Length: 120
Image 1 (cartoon, rainbow, N blue to C red):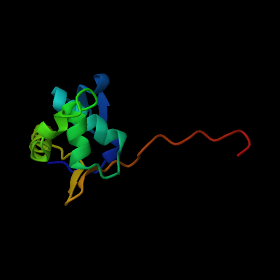
Image 2 (cartoon, helix red, strand yellow):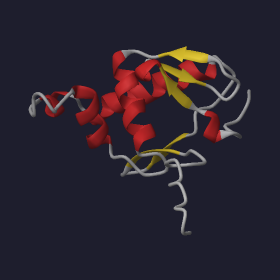
Image 3 (tube, rainbow, N blue to C red):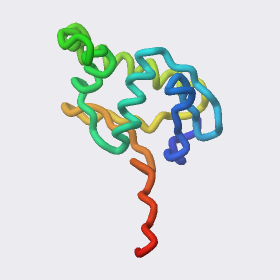
Image 4 (cartoon, rainbow, N blue to C red):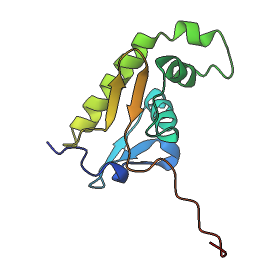
């Protein structure tokens, strides 16, 4: 099994409906997996709480009571399912649990660097 040795090569494709592995394999994502990975990639290298992930996956932006129904344990199960899908490609997703805090997706970059100005 390959490690996540080239973490910057992980990318979401097709508006987040597929994950591209470092060796260019596409993994299709369910709606919940897509929402989970969109938030984690948008906050790459930062700890994202299970509560924030629950809000994103449950669609709380439309119904604030939905987060109560989407328990943090369900996030753990969702993460486990995504990891299992990725393992079938021979890779390990660089997604790590931070005890009592949440999850962090470790990528070599967090955002594209800002272009240098002409005077710099």
